[in-house]
Length: 108
Image (cartoon, rainbow, N blue to C red; front, side, top):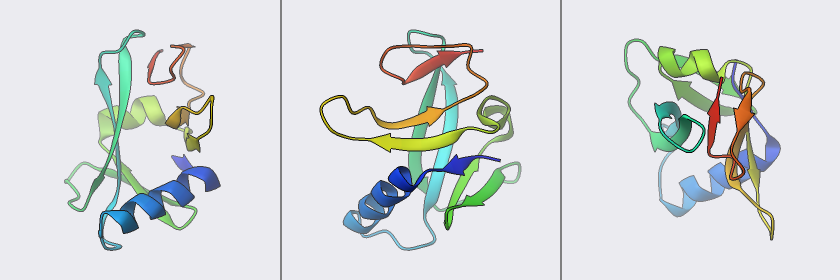
């Protein structure tokens, strides 16, 4: 399962509304190579599911990931932080053994 915090839900709904996207658009989360710790997160709106996608619904929102990324994201929670020390969107990921200071990359 991948979870969505209330803070992330609020921001996702605002961004989706601002972009004039309908409810068919969901969050796609992907883990890619790169970043200072070796792996990076990428999230974006999408409305096309692929055959091997893993689909989760939490907090009344759909979050989708490919199977490879799910292996890294299992039991993670998408959060959003704003303010002076804000990171924007980030994952609380219990699978990460190390993260960088910005929260955008990790290693296992």
